Length: 381
Image: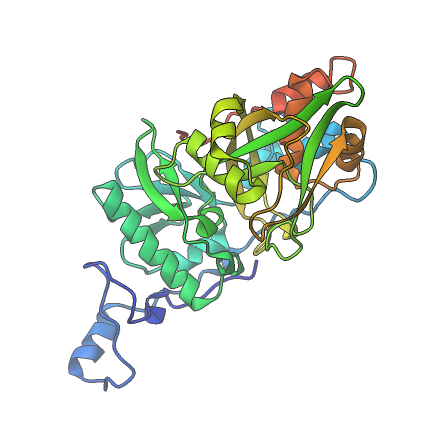
C-alpha cells in the first residue's frame, strides 16, 4: 500500500453527508478567507504526515505458487498470520508493525489491527486519537453502540468519497458486528471497510452433498462469477456468505442458501446440520480485491446438508456462475490445484476430517486438525 496524506480527510467531507456534532464545519468553495478563518487556521495546524509511522516493512502476501498443494499448504495460505509459539520473531515483527484498534470504553482491549498507512487517514480527525508510541488508534466518540456505529459510518463514508482505498470500491451497504470483551455489540461497520480496521468478521458456509451406493459421496461445488471483485472465477463452498448485524447464524444460512443456490427455506431449516466453526487469521493478497496486506481474522459457522439426488442447486444471483456435482477425488484434485477460494478450501478440509475422508493416516493430520480452529486474538461473539 502506498502511504496516505489526505490532510486529515476532513477537508474532503462531502456536504451531503450527515455530520457528528464534534466534526468541524467545512468551508464552502465560495467562502472568502477572513479574520475568523485565519484564526482557526493558526489554532488548528494541518496534521503532518509521518513517513516513519506509515512505512510497512513486511513483504506483501502472495498466493502459494502454482502446483500440487498439500492440505497443510492450503491451511497456511488461509491462516497466514504468524503464530507466536511457532515463530516469535516473525510474530512480533508483524504485531509491532500494526496499530491496534480500541474504543474509549475499553482502552486496554484490542479489537483489530490496522496498517500504518491506513491509520494515516485518521490523523487529525475529530473523534479519533492516534498514539504513535503505543501504536494505537482509539475511537473516542460514542457512549452507546448506536453512537459508535454512527461515528464509524461517517468516517468510512468519507473514506469512500475520497476514493483512496481501493477496497472500499466494493461497498456493500451491509453492516458487520464488532463485539467487546463481554460479547456485547460495540459497533457495526460497513462490510467492505472491515478489513481496513482488521476486526473479526463472521460468516456461514455450507457443504451440500449426496450419497449413493453406486457413486458414493459427491459434493455440490459452485464456481464464483469471474466478475466478482474478490476471488473471481474460483471454486467455492455450496453456500457461503457473511453474517450481518442483528442476523442469527441460521437465518443468515437460510438467506444465503436461497440467494446463491435456490434452496428452499423449509429444506434448509429442517435438514441443514450445524457442525461447528472454522477460525483463521488471514492476511489478504491481491485475489481478495483492493489493498494487499489488510488483516482479516474470521469465524465461519459451518453447516452440512445432505441432499437427495433429485435436488439440484441453481444460481439465483450474479455471484455464482454454475454448480457441478463432484466426486471426492475430483474435489481433492481441485484442492491440490489451488482452485478453491482459500477459506473455502479450509471449510472443505474440515468436512473431510469430520466425514473420515482425511484420517490419521494422512500427512500432518494433528497439526491440520488443530489449525482449523485458531484461537483469535480479539474479542468474539
